[in-house]
Image (cartoon, rainbow, N blue to C red; front, side, top):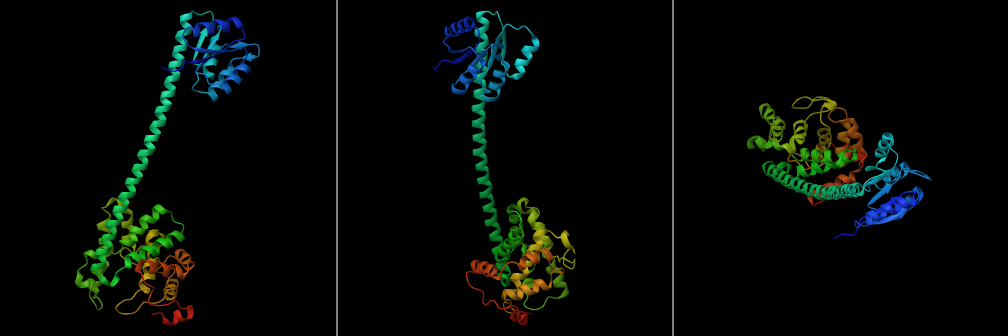
Length: 368
């Protein structure tokens, strides 16, 4: 059984305080008596009360200020007004200030006890609701954490699946082995330098990693052909953008990334394929990827030539600013030192590039 409820009785008439106290203590309530509103406020600030009974008019002021203060600082402590003022506007004002109930003097003993029990039940309900709300918030927080963890786990499983797809493509097109991982790392670094948010970078990274997934639908005879492709073969090869888009767009978590796959061969001046998109009509992820893709293509070995330096790649990208590439992104790219690209490449391939960085003049002399 819990401790008895503590009730503060505020009235400037001693005999009224005594009568109220005696009535309530016979019901096993604990009472504290106060003759003024100011004294009552001091009690309330220093002690805990389950209920306050207050007169409306006292020598040091009316009870409205006390009611209002309680309502603001102790909203779960109900207040019952006990007064002889038979004015409905005063009663309404008290209720608006936060009073729970209003008893007119003289009143029956049973009326007082019933009003007190109702007020205490009301307080109990408020506390239970608050406890329930706190528990509910904790449950929601815990479940939200579980949901976030589940989403992270799901995303990790997605990315593992994507990596497997990329590895499968590398096996099909051995000429570009490791290309998807390198170009994705370059794209992420450039996107971060552009100030793009982490959620959007995830989308861009997936699009970069799967940019050539459409080549899975290109015949090996064309994909692995050592010599120059015929015009018909080139046309078929160019279909890999749309084929990749059609593969990915039906997968919900890759729907946005599929737009990058679709547009990764578009040029800023509209001369690219498959749709001839121009300028900002090309998704930002595809515009960033285009620079990363060229960076890796120039600095990687090909059957028909050896890898060039990052300085050569930098010059080529600068040369194509405004035609193949978005000038704004090129400007950001040029501010990133070659050391970052070399470090990324080394981290992914596990070996230092076969070339060494050269100065600008040497790079220009060795460019294609």
